[in-house]
Length: 301
Image (cartoon, rainbow, N blue to C red; front, side):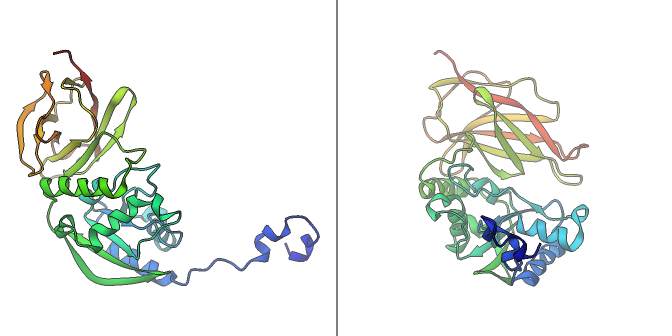
């Protein structure tokens, strides 16, 4: 409608007819970035986008794909990005899971920067050259977006367990308070896993199964919650293709006292932290396998 049609009506200044259409100045660069990633990745390659501004975030690339190729022709596997400290989780599991990491510099945020430390620290891992970033190589191609430069890192080797544990300590110090949706278990690779916190302190693990000829999927889960001195891990009967093992791991990444399920009563790790290893055979009709929900409960001594 023409502006004159509502000129005398209250609130007419809010109508879009009074504003120019929104047009991205970096339109071509965004499309080129999406196509560049499509040219080198497969749908089995997780991509972690480290940015959370209105100009660039984890939704930008899927939108560019839809525009250029159609929703049914999406190829990029964009991981769910933690954006807000009070709502999301630590970014470590996304970093260790990612085959490619897309980093926008300077650090991109859309609310108070102090409320988006989960984004800032992921940015710092790569820009400041943490040990965790040494598992990646920075690719030469760069892209210019509104107010930032975008660089891409490609994984060269799996993340080491000890390096991931040390990185977690730095991430927790940088974020200051535990993000609201962070489960007690954090996946540390080398396989792909997602953890969901259920009721009564139970957790559900979804393990990504890769098609043959890939080797079986194996993931280490580090426990960061409180644990009774004597406890037991409770889980329903596991699928035949799933193996669970529990042990203790120190900051050096060495796992000791590793025991397979069914688990006997256990004592809290006096040195190091509790870890769970989840393994599944390769293949399967579905790409994700749900491991039976498990939990930790106190057991009298």
